[in-house]
Length: 243
Image (cartoon, rainbow, N blue to C red):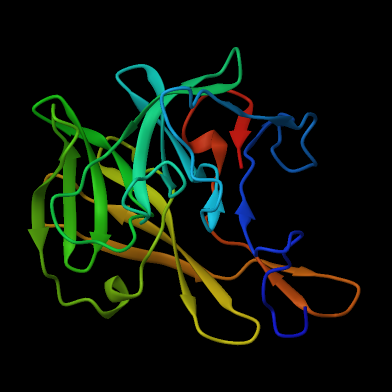
């Protein structure tokens, strides 16, 4: 649309999210070979059909002690009517997200999203970057409540802009590396991507190795943008990706 609003294919302006498993070629540089819609076992949840958004949004796959897990944001399964995070298991063979568990927040929050899994643990609990400024890391306890483990304020202007990111992975056994994005209000909106190195065992360092935009020119000479970019080869030695 000329004003860069979303196009809704229904009369109630409701977003419906479908996730797709794709098989890629060896070079990860051509169109996916397959497009298979990911199923969701939500048999233990009551869905609100009038929610502003339906489905599992912004899925991030991560490794948890050898198991493929996912974390996602959702609103139609959430009784309070605000976005909350859900974790669960991704069954690759049967292409299904299952064992969904809502993560409880013990403070007031209108919207939860963009948590980034780290390849590290605290008391055998997976750690997640909750937000970048102040830099906040936490874990999900046995009662499915999210607990903050680290919270520090760093004098770094770009951290105030950072939002979502890919899961972080080990790099040379010294750093964690991930791809982070942030946006600048504009028409059309502009999303920047930054490759971040995180040194986990020392004072946190964010090295914005490169900040860049992915452009895709369309026939009308307008620019579309890509956000929440993921590179599946970062996370698993398998030829799959979830988008």
